[in-house]
Image 1 (cartoon, rainbow, N blue to C red):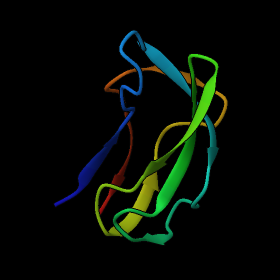
Image 2 (image 1 turned 90 degrees about the horizontal axis):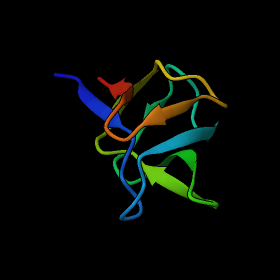
Image 3 (image 1 turned 45 degrees about the vertical axis):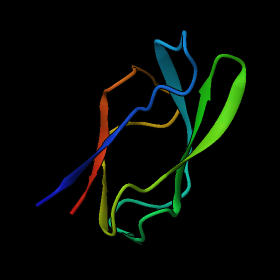
Length: 76
């Protein structure tokens, strides 16, 4: 079963964030806890870790802004 990769809420007032860079490529094997992407929000950049181990399927584009809770990809 696929695990959704969601845009996390990093700060109390955060409503949206931008995927600055994917640190793994579509189709890569990833491990739970591995940094997946850089998230720019509220004048800071944070690395977001993989929530599970499996194969990465990216659906969100780099440089786009998304609301908190948006599905950015899946780990199958």
